[in-house]
Amino acid sequence: MRRRITKKINKKAKTLLIQWVRSLLSEEEQDKITEKNFIKMLPKEEYIESKRTFYMTFYTYRWAKQGIKKLLKAGYNLEQITIEDLKTLMTRVKPKGEIL
Image: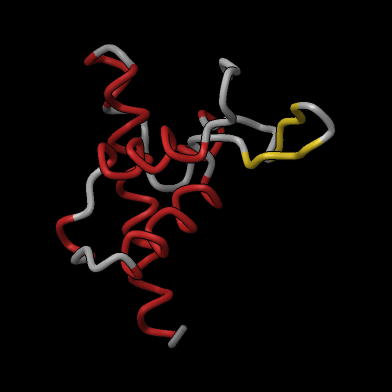
């Protein structure tokens, strides 16, 4: 991908994850979340193992970037992508018969 598109994807991933983290916290703690410290609130492990197969952990920075790239290839507009769109990707990728 071109560099300017990659920068836009990175920025969109940050804003979506910041919104998601803020939705989990109380109103007093929401004000403390910034671009510099939101990474501390995300899952630490990037991969999970299930039946000898490794899957990318949901709600990590890398997961958000790759999800946005998939949505762009599917025809979505970058400005209109929401965290709900990324959640729909999550349900399509989840292994059958397992609860993660």
